[in-house]
Length: 350
Image 1 (cartoon, rainbow, N blue to C red):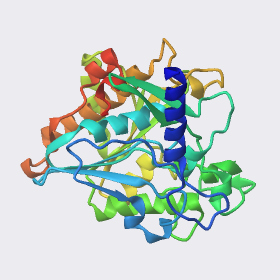
Image 2: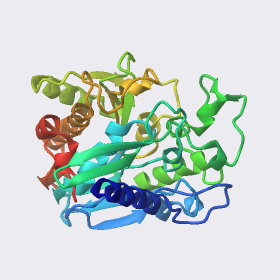
Image 3: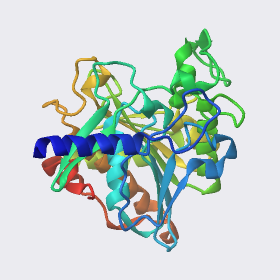
């Protein structure tokens, strides 16, 4: 009887968080109110459409969590879920929301950057939900798709997608890839409006350092890599050296001059922010049979720890050379070594 009662509660939980929270002009539109439980550092929760009204009422509007120390310092932005099937980045962002307490500067976090992409999956061989055990019971996180849901996009995929700045022609579905369309358009497709809103946030909030958290297949050239805008490549290089001293080997690559539309390139070129993209290896990115959570060679906790350690190393490098009133400091942060050893669930709120 107790087992059936637990199943009933879990089913009620799924219904509760999956109910659409706004109307939309798109057929079948809706969103998922993800299970994020802000820690004591969070001073404000709002929606991305605050920075760009054309996003309001769409399936791509997403929550923004702000931790403001109230003291001078850098403004740091962190995005998980640009691709909603890259779960380590999403959970890294959630851990920061639930644990980080800045003592100087501000932290702005969006854990589910492409909300539309989180509403569907592109394969039946990957999980729809990821279960994370905590000391007080399980929590569940949505595992979505790489692209905006075509139902929400507002326009059919083109035969080929070419970024307005030029470059290689890509598969038409890449028009729904948020990390190909920056800086976006306020009156474009849903994906373009989402990109435009994020660019507006970076500009209006004067973001100094911006991170886009990703995953790639273990065999990919991108796995375990930091990609940096050329203007902040020196910070990334120092961080990579320090990470290696801590036993974490990360490759380093500058943004391509020829490949437009990616966050690290367009965020850094279009705003004052020092922009970085961090990639960890997700087995499900290279094969539909890969397990994105329980793979013994690439455990989820280890990938989250790599994200957190990389962010920390870059912020340490920033603090070494910035003016005193531009430091970013924390009274509390999730410790990456403890996350690797104990798992993400030990740092999730209940």
